[in-house]
Image (tube, rainbow, N blue to C red; front, top):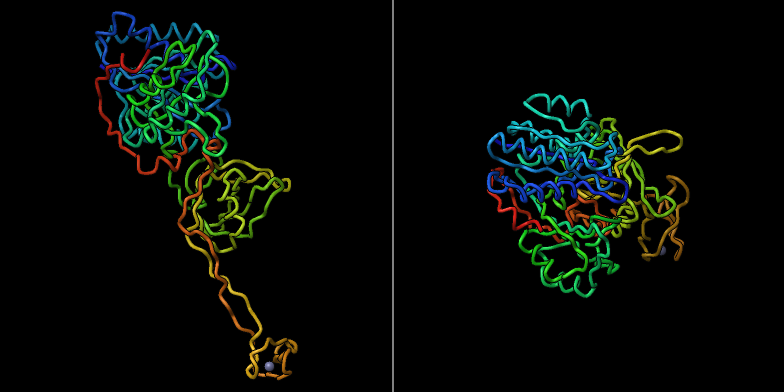
Length: 443
Ligand SMILES: [Zn+2]
C-alpha cells in the first residue's frame, strides 16, 4: 500500500518554513523502527505553485512525502507526521496537511497539478478531490490545496530539478563568500543560481530568517551534497534534498488565445499589439494585445526584464507577440482590468510598417516639396515642377530580434522560471516508484 503526505502553509512568521516540517518528519521516520519497514518511493517533493494566486505563503510552495509499506507501518508514519505538524504554532487559517492512502488516478493527478501551477483551485474543489478516496485530513484550511497539488506532482512526468535545503535551529549560520565562488566554479552547470552574475550577490543564502538558511539548486542530488562539502558552512544543523519543479517553466502552460487570459491564470498567450506601448513612470512598459475577435488584454513588461523591456518599447500595433506570465488585476483609469505580468516574452512576427516620402526630382535628383494635396511637387534645388508625381511608399526596416526569448535576470526570476542557463539541461522524470536510499539525502 502507498501513502502520500502533503504539507502547505506551515510557515510561522519569519521563523518557520513548510519544508522544515517535512525535514523533521523524515528525520523522525528514519530514526524510528519504520526506517527498515517503509520504502521511500520518490524524493521528498518541493512543489512550487501558481505564482499569480494572491492568497499565498511566502515563496508559494508545498511539499510532499511518498511512502510504501504495510498499512500499520504507514499509519505509524501518519502518527509521526501528525504530531510534528500539530506541535507547531500553525496559523490554522492557512496551514494544511493531508495524508492519502492509495494512489491517485494519473490523469486526475496531471489535471490537478497543471491547474495548480497555472490556474485556480478552490478549497472546496480540493476537498471534493480528496473525499474521492479513503483519506485522512490532518488539518484543515487553505493549505489543503497546495498539499494536494504537491501529492499530485508525484504522479506527473516531466522536467525536474533538485534543491538541497539547509537548516539551522540555533542560528550562527555562515558561509564564506570565497567558498560559494569555489562551489559555483566546481559544480556549474550542474548547480545554478548560486551567484547573481550582474551584481555578484550570493543567492544561495536566503532570504529570511531561520531555520531555512541555505538553498542550493541543481540537476543532480549527489552534486548538491558535494556542494555542501565545498561550502563547508558554519552552524548548519542539517539538510535534505528535495526533487522539485523549480526552474522548469512548468507553469508556462500554453493557453494560446488572449480569450483564455482570465484573472490569476499563469501561462503563455499569443496576440497582436492593439496599441503603441506606453512607457510608465519607472520604466515599465504597458500595451494591449488582442486575438483579432474582440478579446483584449493588457501586457506589462517590467523594467526588470532588462533588454526585453527596451525591445518592448519598440513594438508597434500589429506586431505578433508571445508572452508568458501571470494575469493579475490592474486598476487603470479607475477600471479594474486583467494585465499579463510578463515573465518572458518573444516577438513572433513584426508588422510591415511603411512611411510616405516625397519623390526625388526627375531632372537633378534633388529633394522635392509638395505643392499641396494632389498638386504635384517642386524641386527645392532646380525648381522643376512635376505635376504628375506622388508620394512614395517605403517600407521601414525594423531591427527587432524576432524569435529571441527574453527573461529577467536571475535575481528577479520566480521559483518556477527556467533560467536561460538551464536550457539544454532539461530531463524527463517518467512517473514510477523508486526505492530511494533516503539516508543519502538527509543529514
Ligand atoms: Zn531638380
